[in-house]
Image (cartoon, rainbow, N blue to C red; front, side):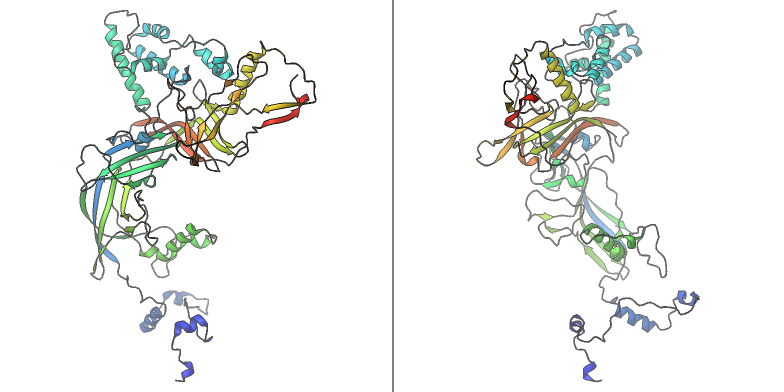
Length: 612
């Protein structure tokens, strides 16, 4: 053969296009020249050697994993969750009969704010329940006595009762209950003390009724605990972060593995909410892990739209990956299509069931293929965490160090699949205001005295109008303006805007944090000093309902440029034993960007626009 037709280096020739006559095929197919396709569909093989050469040409003999698994044994270590620690508080045994969301998110029902009774929807519900229990026990004559002992009364109409008289709907519902219904919330709060009894302060019709009433009091408290899941304290909720922080642990051979959820606030608790943390939670020692070896017959992974392995078989048209048109930057869709169309036939399924609340660690997989070869396969996620070649899915990260070794472990938390969330009781938007150089906590939804949340702007407008009416009756008209312009020291903002001002962190020169402050309610003609407007949501009232009021600081990095939105509402779910749980939970989401409150100082305004 002539030397000019010999290609010594085919790869270099193809890359540099040295010989234009060289042709490479990546797809070969037959094209019938007749309208009859019956012979073509038979796929007759007249020359097997030709088929082998074409397989060699397409690179099908270069694979080193051509064997298919036919038998496998899985060695796994499993351990259940045994300890729970909310927010750095004392470690307690984990209750497997309670969903983890309920344990972590639960918040205490606040029955009053700023010394004022609230939640009259729940107070009336508890009072109605107590009346029904008295009727069922044959003691209906005691209902009027309990209405007198635990009454609902309207407070006097003054500047401290604006939460009732400023809002027509709240006043109507409050007045409808006053003098007619029993305050079941006061009875519940009274019975929280083990030394108190339901018969205290009640004139008995018969001596034997005392024991019956006290027994009904215990049943009443048991009914309330079954209706509303209440914690002893809110240890997991961290107000400076507006997030939940808690941890749990599972036993290991020589110690224990701590799983920490340091930044949970999205109402969807799952494995990705936890990280492996160093140390231990203390408490009594655990029994340790359990080792199991399970045998499997591998099953190929199948899904709609995947390539069919049979010759001339057509794929299901319900899923058409060819119709997907992702952009060049949509990496997730590109990877999904590549897996579905190229690597789907190489995946096999080894089903293994794990109970909820279990940390499983796979030590290895022994696979036997159809050639009789046996392989010991380790988890793909082993190795240092900072190794970018490491492939991991459903795997926990480590809070210790980036150089810590990853392990192929899977955590199945004891969580519910879905919940029913009620309407927002509270909704607070924290947004930056660069003009005013502060952060505003906009109380978009406020808890009303009757229970359900109301729009914060409506509550603020009605409250201001109520105080203006009170002061208007005694106010002295100001003197008329003598000039065409006037000096305005400060503009006003709506009363549902709560300011957070930047302050220095103690002991630091550059680091700052956000401190809750208050705006003044300035009304023309008010003879008294301006009153500080308090926040009305429990999310922002942190420390104001204590006997010794405390300041509230928020970490500055918790309010990004986009802001955050924090909501509080009732949540309900049903656990595996059929028991229903109702609790109050919070959720934090990304906000809607910066806001402008319109706050300005030292302004010159048109005097004609001012009230004369």
